[in-house]
Structures are given as C-alpha cells and as structure tokens.
Image (cartoon, rainbow, N blue to C red; front, side, top):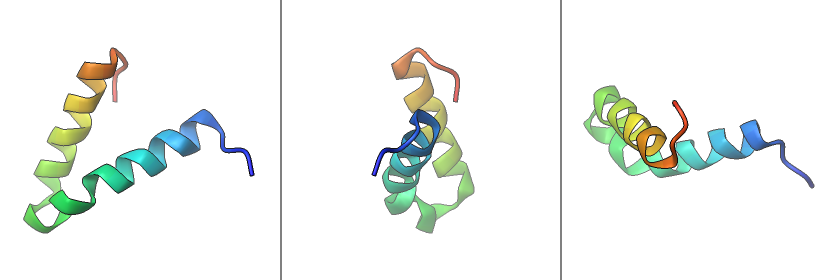
Length: 43
C-alpha cells in the first residue's frame, strides 16, 4: 500500500496529536503549528 504525501502527513499529525486531545483543540493546533515551523512548511 502506497500513501500519498498528504495522506501520510495527515496520519502523522493525527498520531502525534493523540496525547494532546484530552487537553483541548488549542493544544493540537499549537502542536501542528510548531511542527510546521520546524519542517519549514506551513501547516
């Protein structure tokens, strides 16, 4: 099974956000923004 880059990106973000979901959406959005800054790509 081959995943498109966008599908892979979404799955990685979902997996990474999982521990933060209990504290709210803000934490997930902040994490996604930070990941975008570190990768050099906008989230």
